Image 1: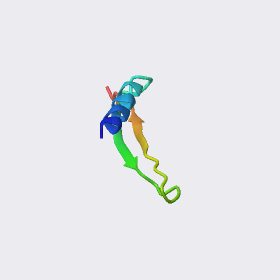
Image 2 (image 1 turned 90 degrees about the vertical axis):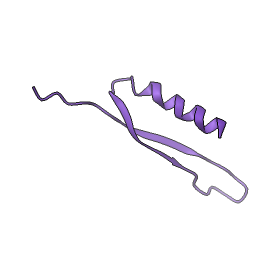
Image 3 (image 1 turned 135 degrees about the horizontal axis):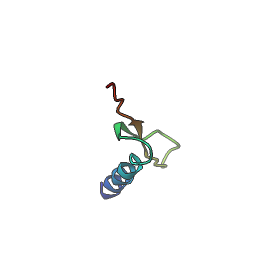
Length: 52
């Protein structure tokens, strides 16, 4: 679980690169092969639209 927490913290600073935040973080573990482990973590960046 420690490594998963580090990955999520790694996503957080990326929201500063042109986005106002990240929402919809997804964590999946597809079956690659018997005995293999892969974890995919991604999120959708968003921008707040000013309608003044």
